[in-house]
Length: 368
Image (cartoon, rainbow, N blue to C red; front, top):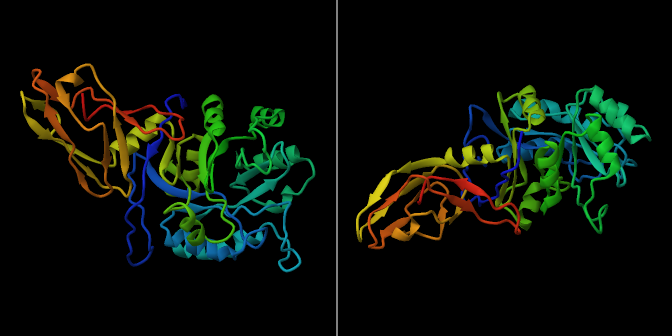
């Protein structure tokens, strides 16, 4: 799968729906025949260095409208062990019944915690975390692989382990070539790692965004964003097997704060499934003003930038425009008196830049 056309889309969650059941509900489109599943595959509890009980992670996910989580406590780092006995399977066992009650898909996982290289790696869909205790990290990950694990590299540019530069080490090549590295966190907590998206392109790694939450998401969301980082998974079904299949097939978008990153095909489909466009195609006569109406059904604000086409001198249109969450948006288009203009065919819109990276074509529908 090619990530050559990586796209960053500025977005902002404006509306939170409060209703019976799950308190916060994301309004996001299903695409390409898949279900869009909201997932967080990196979090901690008191069984490693987190500050909450495992069931609290389920309650958080349920309140925030998530579909799936994985509690990934550290195997090698258990600072609360004098008060909480070390049992690497226990967080999953404690949380499982509540997850079933709340209809949250709980995936058994753990974090392999080593110095760089190879750093920290999460193993998902494992069967027995207690078997992952071994000084040889390669043997640990080989064991996880034999359990059917999906393995992803966490926070590759974390300054505690990469103070000067973010590097793909020989150890990562060894893991990758032995089928023991499948994904990489582009976003972790509030950090973005541009090298990760480059490696995802080069090596067909699944793009991930996870919270790595240790305290509570309510506290952490107040710092910078209205929602935790999420991996949007495009699954054939809302099941653990559906998520596993999608992760191994790289069917994800990484979402942090105001940015989406992933395969261009998924991003374009996601955008165009977010609403309806009316009055297209649209012709303009000399001096005429007309509108294009876009209904955005999602909780996402799309901030767009006009890219000029060959006929764009014949009319004026907004250089920048925001498609508001759950609203009608009406860009004004005015003929410049240079002859007939035509809107709606072969139009190019381009996304805003994210820290100067990955500014690419988003769509071809609004302005010539």
